[in-house]
Amino acid sequence: MNELDDVQGEKLQKVLAQAGFGSRRAMEEWIVAGRVSVNGEPATLGMRVVPGDLIRTEKRMLRVGARAHAVRVLLYHKPEGEIVSRDDPGKRASVFDKLPKLRGQKWIAIGRLDFNTSGLLIFTTSGELANRLMHPRFEVEREYAVRVQGTLTEEQITRVLKEGVELEDGKATFEKLEDQGGEGFNHWYRVMLKEGRNRIVRRTFDALGLPVSRLIRVRFGIINLPPRLKRGMTAELGEGEIVQVLDWAGLSAHENEPEPAPAARTARRKR
Image (cartoon, rainbow, N blue to C red; front, side, top):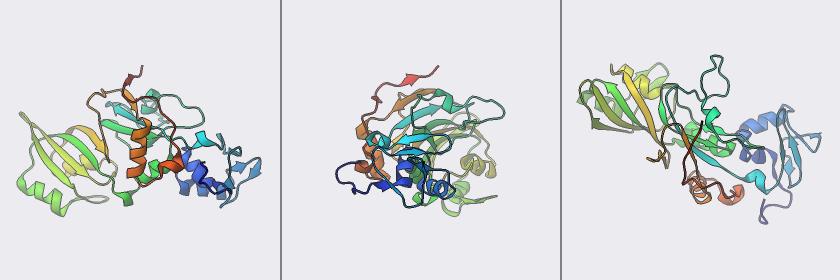
């Protein structure tokens, strides 16, 4: 915390969320369920903590202090053939296998990409930031490069932009759809939408009779996939870039006190 913080400390659920344990709402549920203690005593909803307090959950602990508020943001160019999960019965390769190791925090994936989709995947240590960017009510833009088998008609383009395409879980509408050309049977489009329903881009094109043969996420919100970031590589945002992201997400950079992160200028290939 900084000198402007209330002398009584900050709310426990806020500190846990900022440290990457989960969203504030999830942390409130943990507290009510008795899964959190502070200095050896069961935590209660509304409790405040100050620097030096020791917070324990079922699997992790956190010493409250300035470093507990450090926010880190990592970009990863996901290749096809990896899952966005820490646990997989099939033992397939996971994106989490490629990320830098953390002490006292964990990487949280902001949204998902399915097994056969590549492109920009963002990770953060802030549960609050992750929740803000993924929650449907914030309508964060996602942009994709899509290669399909066939070509959309003018009628189909109008339909997907204006009326929407009916799927089993409701209509899907693209905010933007640009023809990027192509050769032979394959055709490229650039699409933008403001929701992250499971496989929504693939399912929408499938419903139009155009199977997707390749799908790449190139932008999430204000963050673009850097051209220099090759598949299987990571790049961490610097302090100034993180402040911009927090600002855009409506979170106070001062509350999170982001510490200088390793320079994002050099991408690293993970073995």
